[in-house]
Image 1 (cartoon, rainbow, N blue to C red):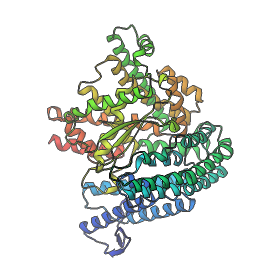
Image 2: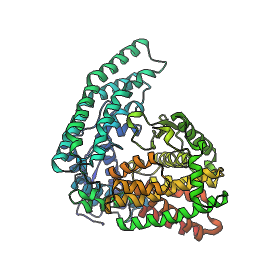
Image 3: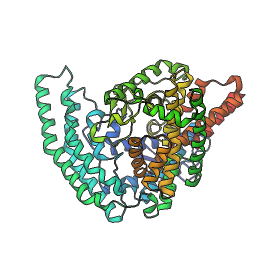
Image 4: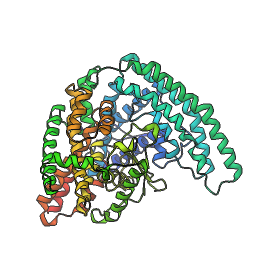
Length: 581
């Protein structure tokens, strides 16, 4: 919607507003819009100090965010004010980039309104994400190259009691309102807190002082960190764990489906819309999943016969029984990921014109967060803190190495690290578009990226290629089981049985099922995004013929930052038409 108001408000980052005439020039309206974008971005950094740190902005490094209900309400009011002011700026005559930026911020703010209306903030943690595990990552997500940075860290440790207390207060409201995760999820949370205390990651910075520090500073800072951990952090975690175990977990809902909550059908429909960025129903997603499972299984059957087996089931049994593909230790899994990422990095110029500047590292998920899935944590735009591929390694002998090559490309390069690092270094876009964004785009890109390894000569082992297809099958299975849980009333065992039938081992099936229960809709983003990017690639190849350039196509997909799939379709389709001229 475009609105031409009687007055336009242009506000600087410090909220000094001036009035502009109604028929303002394009240049003045663009300047007003850019000022609003910058104010919104700067406001977000202040609200989320740890997010600012991850972005490489260290002005708020001695602070943790405000998680109180009053802050949530204040943030909502501020966002509504941003939305009102944004809608008051007509985009008539602006460039495509400026029009897209306007639409993206409007969409983000409107999605926030829906989430606030549904009171999603009253269920702020689960076994996948939450303040309890996020705080435990502070020692790995902050810079520690100056005395000031260490002092900032101490200041943050001392604020952990406040943060956990504020979170508890909000969760008590959710408990009262009946907005609770399922009991199968709530019962895991106290144990995670206990695991954080047992592992004590908070002391890690005392093990890696820069050589330039004086002995006096090392001694002082070690004592200050140790005191903060013992006097502030541990008591706060003990209190939070007791609340989770005694008050919260027993009141977890019995039903798994989010549709069992108040306004449940709308909740899941909105989750599907948010995570896919498409106007598609849960029923349509479910059927698409069934169709994709059938298609990919047929491809795997062809591969099994090429490998000399009579059918897919026989080959699967052989692979799953082969000790070559069973890890013997956590370290072996981590080294497997490092090997595959290292072999892909020199091949990137064959696929991309734009290349990431930031390095990427691989590390295991710590024991206290064992319920988390393998994931990626972004580094800073300046490359001083690398991106981190964080690998699930718990109970290693129950896992498989078959999927490692595909997942390494997914999380590292050319997947998440490639896409997110590229977004951070883009020029000419407002800052709010350079980080975060849309799961369907980022996860869809990462799944699409898994197959790119084959295009540069990898997956040489037929079993590893089987792993690539199995990884894609896994994402198709997610379409079926996520909608099965939340829209069709599937039981946990139904989900696990379906995953077993599609060659998901039990250890993974157990943790993934609980992930889908806890995080409705998120698992849909991978396949939906991959299918959209594949569709656009086939469209480009068909229309451009010999003029099709894979590097140019990939650069076009990535150089606008993360986008809703509908916006990506329009953007790339326009590029295809221009290239065809």
